Length: 265
Image (cartoon, rainbow, N blue to C red):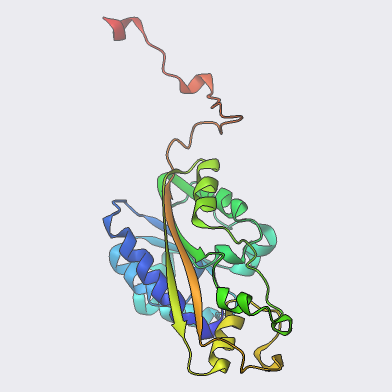
């Protein structure tokens, strides 16, 4: 995401937090990925006032901008949390935080930009504690369907890196040992008065390869853009158990309680 689409990140983050209103969880540490200087910081700080925040900051957001936003929302996070750039995660595939270190991973509109979201889920599983929660949103495969229906080669459209629908993601969560996944989806329709505004958003959403200024004929463009927004959350339960293979769960013998003579008395 880039600055022209910041309002969308704020709106989707707000909807994510509304969906978490019914979730009961004791949060001491939060990982926000990607973190941006948006309104979600203030809401998270109010909901979890004593939580420490780990930030994987969005590309293009200055350190000072993030510092100022966090100072305005929760000054405590300036001294107890850690900040790392999203580019570092993109290159290494790992969050620079220890295993079992957070209770909540909050990810707003990132997964559609990842080549393999399964690796992201695996890394979230690594850093989440037993009983922790992953909450996320991303753009689904129907995003920008009006543009694809035009079949204009000069637009040089490109697919999302991971065009997963909510069923694909639900299956992936279960495959990566997350429990009780809850998936939801909605369509948002954006209306535009000028094609230049539409192209600015299409570019910010990374749906085409050309810069907006390179489009030869903008009069054929639609006046609306559909976004498929997928939401989900899932729990980390039974983290000490070995990962199942071929639909069979392998459990270490040391994890099985032994019945003693006194137990049967």
